[in-house]
Figure 1 (cartoon, rainbow, N blue to C red):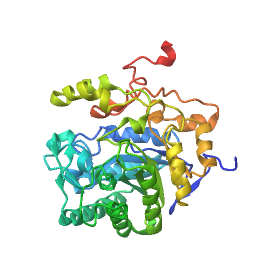
Figure 2: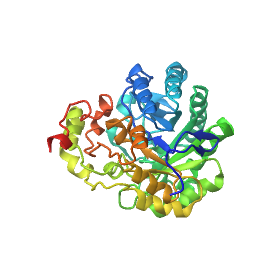
Figure 3: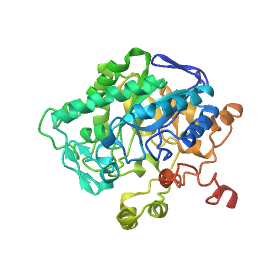
Figure 4: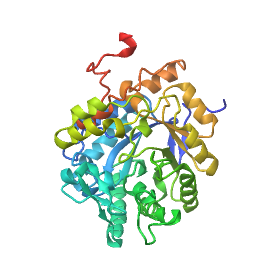
Length: 397
């Protein structure tokens, strides 16, 4: 192996201290849509643990684009907290990235007190309603909001921006032939369905210029029949590459609407999700949990077979996500031509895992992929094994 995961590496205009990126995961620590001390402490600890880039999620570009009222909305009132957050990350030697997005049909319209948006009138289950089909005026306003959100993020000290084109959030729902039923230039052919994502990338780059790294989280497979698939993802990746607005892509998979466990793999925490909810959502999760939260066997690098196809389709830098928890996985990704790796759940279990691996390449992650961290997004994202809320099977067994 000629490249070490712990060597400095370029990412667009940036030089990152290593090739490890903290994946964008919603932390559930912004109850008023504003940065809290808890969120700052969370990211400071992970930055101190050795990653090269710490990604803050989820940063909505408009109030109706939040997953719910507890998500950050990029607006003037948020700026002071965002600056404190980026200062904390930088103080530990890492770069800071903001995940920009609009939840679209994934938004909770009841919590947001605003209609969820979509390419067509499709279900928005978190709010128990249908989306509003976006008009051309809505799309123009969306692009302006992405510009405004990108400017706020960069002015608040973020070095990089990750645009969310995954998981059937708004741009991803436009990509999906299952969800996008439009008959205009934003629907029908794949080129038309990709138009919104391309316009968003162009708007963000035009706003912040070449001094900021910009990459996109792009779905490879929605995990549903007749949904967006890897063949289409390869073509969209080629379109995005040809446009020249992005410095990298982070392939992902699964759908917050249709099949969330395809992203995570491992044990689906159905009971814990139901216990974390209330009212009709709690009842719905108990009834539909076995259907909605499917089981996919976990194995290291589980998204690699799909991501490998994108690697063959484009030459731009790619960030491998999904089951990268040790040096062997990092080296496998780099050997296959990926420039960076993204880590999520394993950092909840051990925020200092990168430093542990760098000191001892034989280090094995303590994450057991139980996914009990997933339901904690409603009460402050954490590893319940680390906090002692549930037994550690590695010790109990």
